[in-house]
Image (cartoon, rainbow, N blue to C red):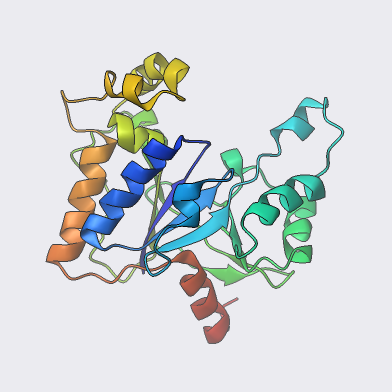
Length: 238
């Protein structure tokens, strides 16, 4: 099963709109994990897009916050009450956090990252949530030093293949950490960010568009993560 996901990571509206537009052009489904209120996400086409939550628990690690796991979850769920899926910012997780997800009636979590691995399966956890592992992420691709000419993952396969992109890297066409580090002081200024967009070598944007083009050419079916979770539960996978 093939799926595309995006971690929004506080991207400005213009950057989010840019990512949504690319998926709209190709008519490919995507699950969007949101960090904040966004009009672009709110009005997005639900036939193509699923909205999940992307809570940030880092303030708790720093020990300088009076908030709790539940407070953080409640805040983002108040913004996206229809969400049934979660991937935490930086994939932070624990047994206690997983229990909070279950308490909030979330259907699945997508925190387990296994780069470039085949043979992954969605499965039900002890708390009746579904764990959906994923196997590709844009910033990890450049951390390995890989070229964005090739995702190093086959998409025309019966295997579970789940991509994770970030709108900021799509917008910048990021190919390495140096470009992002130069641009990140202007993350709230989309016009300024365009001055840093990569046009020299293949980058994140190029790879995404090539993947979506291949989905269309091969007439591949793409899935929202909630549909993968429901399939897992229906098949009784453990």
